[in-house]
Every structure is written in C-alpha cells, then in structure tokens.
Length: 249
Length: 275
Image (cartoon, rainbow over all chains, first blue to last red; front, side, top):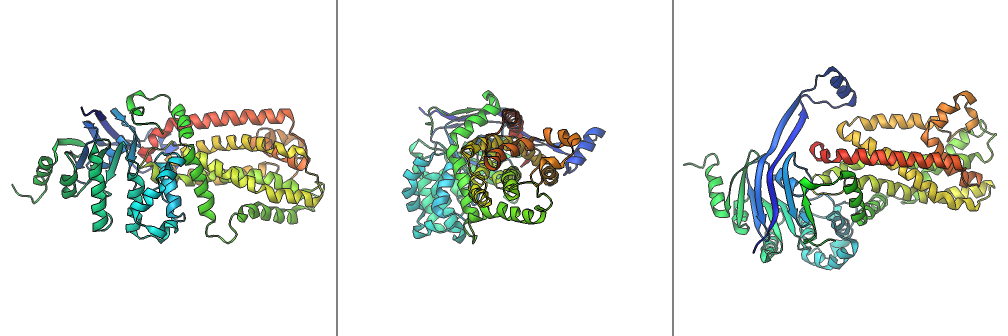
C-alpha cells in the first residue's frame, strides 16, 4: 500500500518587496520614519495542494516563472511557506546546481566529501560510498585533480554520481538531467529508472517532455503559481503542449 | 543519519527556530568541519607561503608597529610582545566577523538550493578564525622568548580566552551578517566601525596613554578591552587574568551570543526570500 511522503496543503509563497529599490540602510531608516514605504507583493505559489506517494517519479512542467523551482524550494525546506502546510516524510536530497557546494580548488575526492556533508551525511558514510561514486562518475585519475581542471561534462558526472549514490528518500531534480553527453544521459535515466524500486521518491522539473514521459508516472502542470492540472504523464504533457502558442487547435 | 522512518518535517509544527538551529549545528557537525577545512586548505593550495601566511601577517604588522612606535612607547617593557598578544586577538575578531559577511555569498548560493542550518557558515567562520589564531601563536611564543620574557604555565589558560572571545565574535558576527543580508552597505559601515574600534582599544598603546578621566569611556565600555586583557595576561604578563575581568568577559560573551543567535535564527526563515 503506497504511503504519502509529501503533502502540500494550501501552500502559498508570497514575496514582499519594497516598491522602489532601497539599497542602503540609511534610505530604509529615512523612509520608515517618513512612512513612505510601499510594498509590492508577488505570489510565486498560490494555494498549492499536492500529495505524492512513496516510490513515485513525479514530474512538474510549466512555463518559465510558473513557480516550479519555488515548489522544489518549499519541499526542500529552503523556503518556509508564507501560508499553508508542508509535510514531508523522509530526507530530501536536491541535486545541486553544478558548481554549488563544489569548490574549484579542491579535488574531486575532496569535493565528494564536502558535497556529502552538505547533503547531510556523516563522514564515515561518505567514505563508505566513495569508491562507488568514483566508479559511476567514470572520472578515473581525474578524481584527484582540482575541480577547476574539469570540463562541464565531468562536473555533471561528478555531481550526479555524488547526489544519487545514496538511494535518497526523496530526490529533487531541477532540470539537471539535460547536461552531459548522450551516453551519460542514458546512464542517468537508467539510474533514475532503478529508483522505481519503490524506495526512492523523485520530483522532476523538466522542460524536456520526452524525459518527463519517459520517466514520470504522474505530472503536475504549474501555471502562474497554481496547479492547473495533475494526472498521468502522457495526458498532462498533451494538455500542456496544446496550450503552447502556435500549437494550433 | 536518521532513517526515513523517523524523519518528518512539518512546516506547521516547528519549534523555536533558535533551538532548531542549535540542534542542526550538532547534527551537521561534520559539515562544519568540512567547511573549515575548505576555508583553510582551498585558500592556501596555490599560494607560495601557504599556511605560513597566517603567521606572517600579524607578525609583519607587529614588526612595522614596533619599529614606528617603540621609541614613543619605550616605557612598555617588551613592547613587541605587548602589541602582538593584543594584535592576534584583534585580528581574529575583525577577520572572523568580517568573513561571516562574505561567506554569505558562497553560502547564500547554497542555501538557495538545499536546507542547511543557517548558522553553519557563521560557526564555520569562527572555527576557521580560531584555527588561524591557534597557528599564529607559534610566532608569538618565539617573539616572547626572543625578547627575554618568560613563558609561564599561565599560557595554558589561553584556550579559555579563545573560547570567550570566540563566543563574543560569533554573537557580533551573527548580528552584523543578519543586517547585511537586508542592507549590503552594512559591511562597508562595519569595516569603518572596526577601524575606529581598534584605536579605542589599547592594542598598540599602553593603557596609561589615555587620561584617567576618559578611561571609563575608552576601556570599560569597550568589550574588546576585556578580551585583549585576557589574552595579554597569560602570554605577556605571565599570569592568569584577574577575576573581575574574566567575569565581565564571560558575561559579555554569553549575552552577546544569546542575542546574536536569537536574532539571526528568528530572521533566518526570511533569508531565502531575500538572498
């Protein structure tokens, strides 16, 4: 019986920015005193209700600015929702943007250790997984060279290997599968499919409808901060495509 | 690492954030160590002098100041050691608190993508600073010996001084970095404050330079006065710092750290909305 691992109930994310750009402390103090501050509100997410079950590979599609990344941030605790409730069972592992958490002067090996601790794993656990990560990344001797000597493809391989070796409870992917060459992408998709064993839940944000239909079971279509439709991947992708300009009737 | 069975996050049921941060620092202690390692190792990997630079910087300052001021302050016996013992405490304080604000840049990019205890970078900055402080003790001990002053057992008291100053620096840094997230000009204002603050503290000059009437304002209301004193006493004077100075220092540390931690934690939920 599949259980819920992620629940979003009435989740809204509201940004409140000063109307005019106030860049200095002095300006702010003056304007507060003059009561001249006006705030502009921007709803990145508006009353989101979603339930995701264990083992699902859940896709999220939508135009730029729809709130897809914001949704991932709320799930990963980066952002506390302004309204509503987020309930998560399990440890969330986001696949970090290339470069984040990695330091160019440190070697691949050292960066795996740093990256692992950022993801919340204790040192001993990382050491146990070290060989496996190095093997999957296919970096060979380069693992002991500083990261600044890597190509972007090598970077991608290291990042993906380091994040997915853990059989994460909940994996978040924000359009990261689109890097690397063809053979590596196939490897990534194979590993992702391996996650369908039911233990790992994934949320995948992507602009590639192909990957989404390939890997995801259910998909949500996010539009201007609200969930416009949720359902089986094929159906939602079709709906989304129909709504694109130039798609025809 | 807790198993998924135990780990539940419910945004509607969070306890006080300050406590959450405290627990987080403990759970992520390996991360703190890795961040300190990254700071120290990465910084010196490509430099010629390497870690030696940590020692040479305060040493260099001391030499310059000694040459310039030793005739002026000839009444201070062992003037170079007098300066250096105060200087390493000051250098730690100013560098660690300033570093916290720049760490927000690297750390900020990370905090935008993954949950980490927000205080991680502040704590690791203090850790890096304390490590550098420890390293810079080596040339200090040499200088003291060269001058002919004795090294006494009181030097073993130094870790306590480091702890107290570290707590104070963490508190101050947390407050200042919180403000700098909202207002980028805070870091410029802070460097100005630091410059003035240094002159108000008797590091380069003896206490006797300031007339009796002003000593209250310059020294007794100046927190760094107490910390410089508890650093100088065990190294330069060869005694354990006196009780009242220690008490005041401990009090200031505790209060500042508590205020800083609470202030930072309370605002930390908003950081992601601003970074």
